[in-house]
Length: 236
Image (tube, rainbow, N blue to C red; front, side):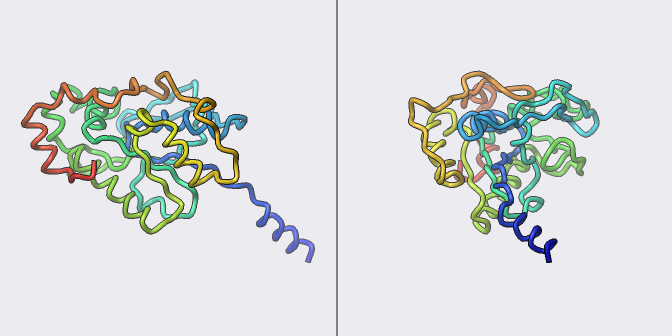
């Protein structure tokens, strides 16, 4: 009887699950982790000691770890995340994602390292969800992005514990993004004022971007934009 009572109380006083960040690789994952940590988990230790990252053929370890690592969910497709845990999915312009994957060391197989950006756009990648998972090279980076984001939109329609935000909004409208996160997952906590919001001002992460939304533009010519429009719908 006592054991049953203890089990019951453990269930009802179970700590609230941490809101974690999910994304397609190179979508601003670490940027959102930092924003989430500084504005919602200010006094919580979220660090992890070591981070394993990179392409499946060349996995590497970042010895200095990640100060916000416990906020990372994963880069998997949505079908591997069918549970009721609270999730933030960050969506970024696929053109920016494609450019970032191409220019970032160790996100591609060494055989693809010397491809021009135009060639890379049209070459199937050999991973699925995350560079750590080997897959048959069927989808190009833009096709992979579409599959990934579509899967998360579909899951969000079925599961009320998912909030999808955009990298571009996080950069341009941080307070509005903060309010969306607060109202979705932190209603019982006091809202910060705009003046008290902690805005992430410097690049963060393994191989951080410069927190800009249009760095891809000089790399897409008219032909590339037409190719892009054939693959990606008008959602972004």
